Image (cartoon, rainbow, N blue to C red; front, side, top):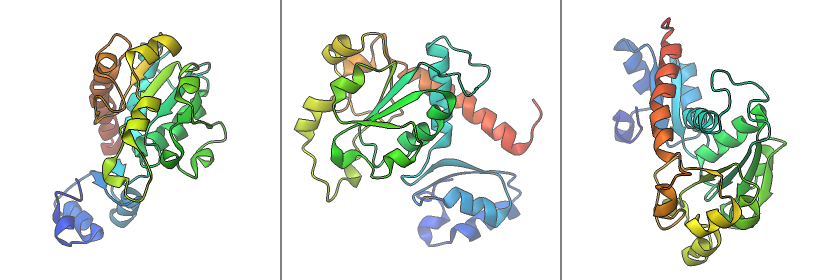
Length: 241
């Protein structure tokens, strides 16, 4: 359920929408909402399992889980279980509009708990003030080439132009400094896994040749998303595999 395509858009409260769904026999709700914390609030109001499909700029848990699965498989690590050391020795560089990215926040909270080193990279206007509070092991690096040279995984994020009001950002300067190009990848991280949660803006944060190149796991992320989200729904419904 999305707040943009439901009765919420017409003025109905989140609580009443949730109670209506419960009365219709819903056993679980998948919610994408513009407000941070809405899925947790809905779960408490209805008593139903609520899967967070993205809440504002807060979190996107299922995306972080599918990203994790993609990394484990492509890096040749154990994908059958997630332990506190399953990503030990892996450096994930997340670059782009981190300030507005719920994907970045969820990955920054999950991956260090599994042993990964996580570097958040971008120009100052696109880095959140609370970035270091997401996990004690989070690092900040504004120089993309320096960050990329340490990357096992380069995760690129789109610039959320719709949220840039009031921020000083020259897109031409951004492209020069932060676009992942073939030349930049070859020079600094020729073996790095390239990821992107989508939607992707080719020619801005990433060059098409990189997005479609041998290092890219972008299509695999989409494929793993189906399995991960199916598993989450099965668990929420209490279905025995």
